Image (cartoon, rainbow, N blue to C red):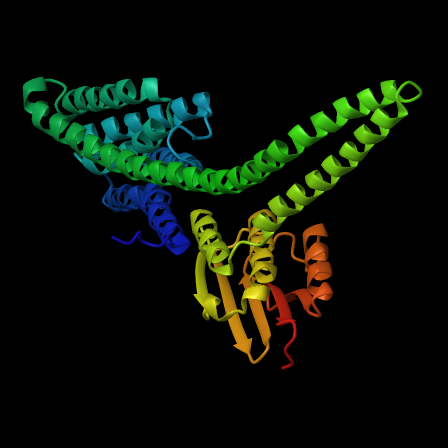
Length: 392
């Protein structure tokens, strides 16, 4: 069973869908009540003062609701809280709903204004307050709607009151569900980013542990023998010379073992490096494609180009917010060329770091060369080398 590739475009599409599901809705909820208000004013049901006051409430509700909805794109509980403003606007919206229900029965449309505000406020509230606010709002709407519809006969106003409360509860639930789902996506995206960083850190720790195991023992023995040699000088010169010879041999052994460790780290097969690079970049959210056959690269050049892929992967993770990476392998006669490209460079320049300088030295030692540059807003790392002993 193959693991599906991560496509960062899906998160962008989901973000757009969530934004359009939440942010523009409060102004949309306000349109119908405003239109009904204008119709009522033209028929003489509302005075100029009533029209102005209700219109101001609708506009304030639209502004406050949109402000809160925009901040909810950061996830549940991330609203920009202004308690006094929120309470005043919400109370005014409730009063407008009650007044219009008593005036001409149009309060059901004004309840949409209340429900939009309630949805974003509940979603922005801390977890411990979320359910109390939601239940309290639904009960308050039911009570206000019941008595506003029929002040003299509450039983008669029970049906419109309950209907209004159910309508507000449904809209609140829809807004809360949309933000909750988006919050889960944000958490997963953050976890994916951390996973990519951990993969790089684990590889560094593995190399550091190997190097420590090799060097720690040798350096400890060299230090002890050095102290012994110092004490023997002038007392037993022959023994001191023997110890010095052993120190020199230990140093050579330590140097050889260190080179073996580095060679094992640098000299891994290109195919293995490609697999590691793809896994790490995909985990970091960069869709990665590989064109060409890594097995076609001559064995003497495998470690060299493996280092290129490894360094290029590190640069992508450190210096970009890449969403797309392309790796091309071309073998033409004795010459091999590998190009690693990524988008969304940060910062937008092609200046090489110490890692790329090290690559250039290694490629130069084998008659090859490395280029790092920007091409059409894509960063391109290209390495070219020929197999030793062959001419192209």
